[in-house]
Amino acid sequence: MERLDHKLDCKACGTIYLDIPDDVTLSTPIHCSSCGTYLGTWRELERDFNSQGGQNGIFDMHDGQIIRKE
Image (tube, rainbow, N blue to C red; front, side):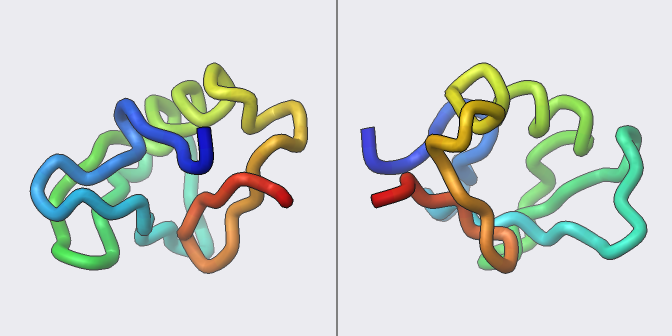
């Protein structure tokens, strides 16, 4: 698996680019930075990221894009 999916991918445009504000909290609404579609709260997306191996250092997040580490 090269990229995360499930809640993290935008169903409208297919990208995984998150618009994450600097002052994010668990209840902050997160939108796709490509098209603006609502993706869920930071709590929901963080839970999904962690369930797919994000907490184990398998993926990196840079400027809201999540990619598999080389």
